[in-house]
Image 1 (cartoon, one colour):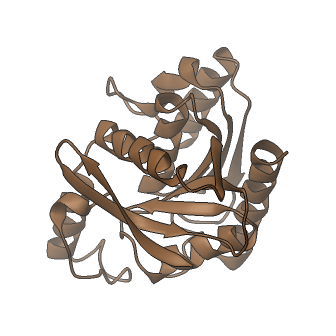
Image 2: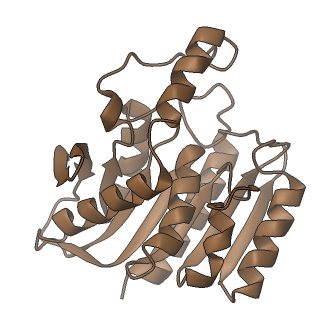
Length: 246
């Protein structure tokens, strides 16, 4: 069952989508972060995969400040200058700190439902959302115990708020499904990521999906790779089963 959810923040009302399995629960909670394309049917399909496994799901609308926008054609968005500018404007319209504040508010709102067990929360995200899921591991360490970052970009940067610098705060188990030949997650990035997490004693696994391109797990992307997508589902669902249940 899909429903709209809203939370009131100092800067306005953020919205998202929540999904619930049938039954009384309690159902473990998973935060599913959208990619740069925003919430849309493809994201719903992916949330429903988690629901079918018995998880309650919340998908924050990270673009709520921008209001409604026309959907993107993913076959051309990155090559059409005007559309590329439009999608980057949305991506630049919020900060990781804002996204984490919203995530905490959504978790608090959903745990009021007796069917939901939000004591231990899982996070999964794709592309831009993979970066947000990684941020959640450090910034929401009191709640987040499992993170799956799927073809996430910007996991290691030269900026002072690079996600990998939060490694010492992380208590969660982490899984990274990295696309092949991905400028947003290069071999050098993966090496630096692994070094930071190992030094901090974080339980993590970084896997390179050879031949799979950035965006391979999202079903409405031209580069969708069904075999690679199923592989990341197996890994993520195993991670959540081992950390969120019992």
